[in-house]
Length: 474
Image (cartoon, rainbow, N blue to C red):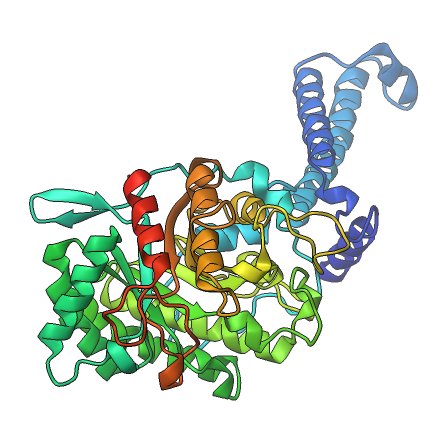
């Protein structure tokens, strides 16, 4: 019987397209349900009625004395068999067809279960495309409710922020043997600028303990810390190893920061370690499968580690950049570059993105700046993931002179554009890269609002300060 049912299921699933078999259609299920209801009603009516003359004429061997009763009995037998067959068919459809508006993806998104310390095996290993867009109608948009932090007896918004590198301790970020003096200088500069969020990368237990000292010092001054976890994910041999390392780092970071830090960004530009050479990054096929699954394992592990320690923590997804949403689309849908689906799905609260001056307009960009259809990256992030958006890095590339850098930072492709479009795209936070120049110390380059001595303001500092004062955000 099982073999017969499996054969019937295979035949039924062969009708229609590969992505949407006919039996998966809501209309098919409606038709089957209606047919079953009609059969049931007709059966009940006939069971409670006398047999019609046609039945008496059919059974010639019966005598007139009991012919109707026998005929009715025979009719009931046949109807019962037919009803049972129809019910079985309907039940079979209901079991294997499912509803096209609710799929394995939706179940995976909404079910929360404690994960073991080892990555679970994927639920589905056969290639089957999972379309993100097909679920959008069922997911309500994220409400525009800007987050607030407590500052003594008052609250403050955290829309404006700046990046720093306390753990590296390069140049002006170093404590010089007097951490309190260094902390006070940075907090004073952030307060004067009008920023309330200070993003800090952290990749070790010791670094997290040092960051906790700063967070404790800064909190009374309305400076909140965004902890950005940055493990070396590709050094792991596979997804399981990456998950274990991420789990350990998540716990190590959250233990000293719990109660001091509310937001944790789980990774930094992991897609750059998995993208294929020359690919634009907007398609799942643009990524190496083995490297992608290691990144996913690390993200899942960090989330689980943080949540074990601080269940109330807010998770900011590993920030990506440019058009690399093919990476986050797979995370969201539980798919991977080899086309398989049903894989573990990270649960995050905030979608993070990076954008720099050479990328131009985030709401209208082409893959190679010259050809192709204009792409609105913020619209994609908003419509697909339906979560608040944070731009956790934006800045002027070092090839711009100071006048150009200042104009960019407050212009339509940066602060002015983010403020203007905050409600439209549910942008709740923007974080400038970065506080101090660090090129002289082996850092990323002279992106800073201050020179490398940590004291001298660059002209862009005043431009940003004046913009923030003129454009307060909740």
